[in-house]
Length: 247
Image (cartoon, rainbow, N blue to C red; front, top):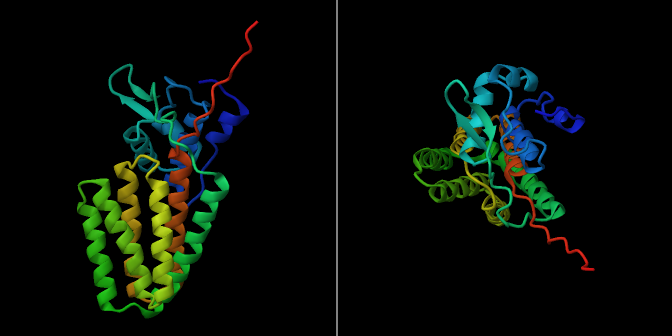
């Protein structure tokens, strides 16, 4: 594997609490930009985990995510290892939304969801918590991403409902619609969904205990993780062919 400054930056240590998501972003972005070309063999797990300063279990989750999304290929046997796929889902022709527009949506989401978490930790009752718990279990048992996403959207709206603010419910509904448009552009690896739903589950516990600070931290961690996944798996924009003048 060729060593360049750009590639060295890919393997710098990642930072908690989003080590899993940032690892997915780093490797997914490196593949998308061609820093890790098709066929590149990644370093062994032990070495790679040490370079990222993460546990091997977290690394395996990230690698599994990128295998499931089609970015990487895992081969067994004496000549096996983890390789960049021959045709990763990077040139599908799906247009990447403008960075400014996507950033605006994500920032809007942070404001809405953290505010909802503050008020829900103060105001949510047993019925609100039960509703969110049912939705967590629905996500855990979902057989398709469509089923998961419907329950996911409903969970975040239930968070706003627990805040007892009709305006927040309307804003949450709006921002979840915008997020659905964004997540439709990427793959949906199982490891990402499992980790995301575990964060939902911890959030319900924090809300039930009235732990405002912890609820906000969990929501912020959850949203930051989503941002890393979007950055790592979002397809590149399709570029126009280069035309050359004929003599």
